Length: 514
Image (cartoon, rainbow, N blue to C red; front, side, top):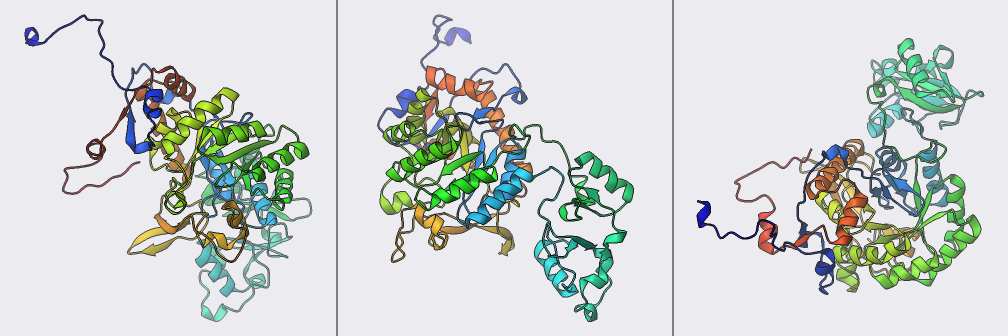
């Protein structure tokens, strides 16, 4: 059959695909779904792909994932999980200074395997209080301290075996009568290692192991049920003192300077200047203040920006990284309401192409719906991706689960939504400086339960590694180099091509990602 083919020189390879420069210099606004990456040559396994990437000029992560500073996304639990899996979490500032700094301290104090913020109760609390606590938090092993808080002197502990067979007639009995008293408890001293605590817990055959200091004050707790969960996290993001990395966001107004100072004192490794439009005198003044007050080693992420001119202003002002994105998030309506913003793929390419000349990493913030979107953002020059909706609904995200039509959900809202702007931190992010009339730039909604971040982030990690393998890039650095030199090729998609690339022509199907 070969003789029927029109043959040419065997070395001839037809021109195929487009370079990023050709695709994004056509004066069109493109987003992730408008194009695909063309495959390359595979000569390595997916597990060999190195995902190390820069968060800022001085901070490097082993996985390019950042959780967004939103009040329904990142508090200490999320930040801990993100850091353990190689990324970093940015604690939101839609709270008081004391609350935010305490969330930062929880991350910095975290020791894997230890519960560093256990729910505690007082001796005078009743069985009724305990049952309410169990209904709210889903467990009944409660340490009893004199203050009812972590840091109080340990009085005892109440577990299910102490109260399981008590009837309603005992609801008013104080826990001091029901608890296992301090003298009968096995404890470990503060500063012990995870291995030492595990050994004590196993040999004691107890369900809970309180950790106390020299003053017998409760500093942490370990549960037998957690022994099976304890495992190493070789990709964990840590500082030079072997503590988990954590970031925190602040506003850009005069009153936010005190918050910035407090967060630095609490141990925040990076500060995110949180503004919907970062090209402002307010942000430049805050960068100048932070660098003068805390030295040039303090890492500041500026933004948000979507143009090279915006990027130039902040780079000249001294920022150490840039957040890119305006109006592209799933809960953001800035583009619709204010007619300002930019399609995300174009924004990333344009800003990253400029910022790389100054060694400033770019964070793709918003619009990430799946693993493929992450790969596309990284292939366009972003060093990391910031995620909100993709992480919403996880067990580490703030808020309680609820059921609707038999589906387990969690609330998720934009920081520009009216409900979020009831707090001043969110108001200032969108330059709403008066209480008379607020212009919503976000919505409130709900998302389906995603389970734990400790399972979800490894799925994202493996997915990005497979994507890089398909295009022939052994690392994210190589991926970006291939893009800038023209070796990595792109192709625009029509609406029909987009439809073809998804599930189609089936009567019914189940879509399970991992």
